[in-house]
Amino acid sequence: MGKSHRLRKLLHQRRTAPPATPGSLVIDPQAPRPTVHVMAYDGEKLTERDLRTAADFKQLPQIVEQHKVTWVNVQGMGDADVIRRLGDCFALHPLALEDASNNHQRSKVEQYGGNLFIVARMLEGGTTMASDQLGMFVGKNFVVSFQHLPGDCFDPLRERIRRERGIIRTSGPDYLAYAMLDGVVDSYFPILEGFGDLIETLEEELIRDVDGDILPRIHQVKSKLLVLRRAIWPLREALHQLVRDPIPQICEETRVYLRDCADHTFQIIDLVETYRELTSNLMDLYHSALANRTNEVMQVLTVIATIFIPLTFIVGVYGMNFDYMPELRWKYGYFMVWGVMLVIAGGLLWLFKRKNWLPRGNRARRLPPHDLNGNAH
Image (tube, rainbow, N blue to C red; front, side, top):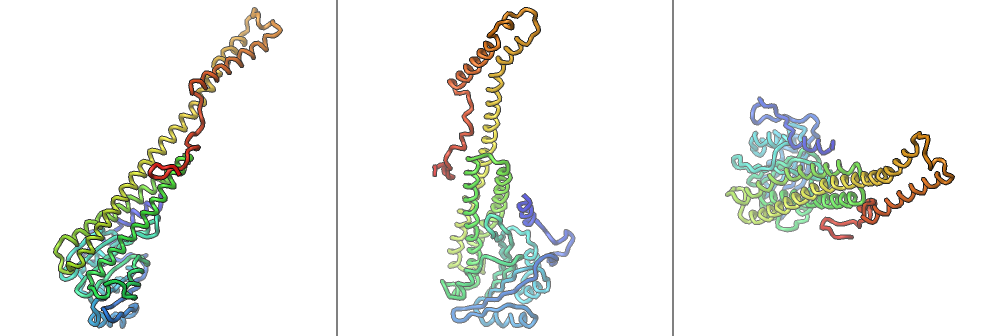
């Protein structure tokens, strides 16, 4: 539960104080130091390097002029000077830089002069779901992306650029922006597959036995699915805005690809809603199984109490201190009382069994495992 709480807190954490000047950069002191990686390319050449010193940043405008598309990727937001330096180099709006530096933004698309600002949320790490914000500036011949945490899902994209796979080396920065958004959306599918396997495992465990720690695990899955839904739902709206609105930075050829990417978000939302419903059903199944187990325990206790009621009555009668009780002075009275009690107990057991009132144990333990569609394995 602690990890899920921290994940939700990450989505809403804001560094800028309410009275701060608009466009102020307030950096998290615990944020990692930025690493700046540049990939500049066209149909013939590719330039790739890391920017570490002031001299490297001074060469950046020259790199941009010599190539059709320049991708500047920043991982880590722990240095405000690096962010401002890139903002001055590409004329990025201060308000957009402020949003890029605060890891709490929902996915959106905004126009700032000649640059397009796109925000998306990246989720990695399987069902543990490490969340990070991707802030992306798309200009005439460049894409500048900001990530708060090291590591991303763009390694296959970088390999496509290096090996000239597809049309990315001959396309503009809008296609690069699409490819990045497509990588973010595609990274959601393995996470959803992990949730599907996890829900199926929880269902099988719940059918076999009602474990005490399974309820927190179900609740944790439900909370993470909620975080996943809150991440993908605004991204769907942002992609539709890119497809629908006449944005100068997006050409008509790229809109076709963006439309396909937006369709993937519909699939993801459908899966998320399905898994949330299945998780709610698991909660109901848990409470039903727990109630059934309690009923079985009460049934056993009721049978035992019912059998011992007449036996207790007989023992109570013969335990009274009357002076004249003929059976007490009979030679076989003791054995007779035992015989009567055994006959009564046996008769009650036979009656309960005939009417199917005896508990049959935990029948759920003998059920074969089922998948999410109810098919037996």
